[in-house]
Length: 214
Image 1 (cartoon, rainbow, N blue to C red):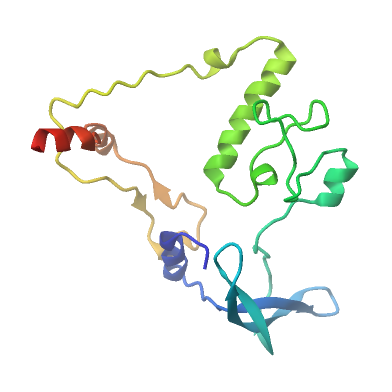
Image 2 (image 1 turned 90 degrees about the vertical axis):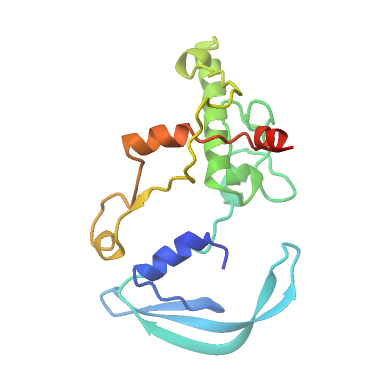
């Protein structure tokens, strides 16, 4: 299952039930259009594909699960018809082609970034693309470089703290499962003031530690 282990465990703690080797078949509803159940087709693992994952093969066994809502979250693809109709050039891989430096597409004043350009990736990369595109869009509109004023560069030194903290890495405080399933409260909160200061004093210069030991 392509998911982060801690998120999978969190879902289990909150009462989520997993059905593996299953492909959505159809959603059933009543005359009023309300969802009543979902049918899935059981699969078995086949040969490995180009991505290194084993391809699921249908067993033709259908199972039904009663439910009142269905959320499809099985991945996303580029809407090729929309992209072509918008005048955007596409790569052979089916992603949108952009200028690697400005992120501008083949259509002037249109920019692209994230999965629609790279294919399936992660949120961090998508956010980086967003910042890069925003910088170039601002430059095009204002005709002057303002990014340094908005987000000034910070010069980080490589000096080891005089008194490094001996503590291990701090982790965020997690709301109990029985509380977070029935609220919209933030699940993982940040560090306390004291924890923040202590985390900042932890020595992350492993090369210095090795040099000192040797």
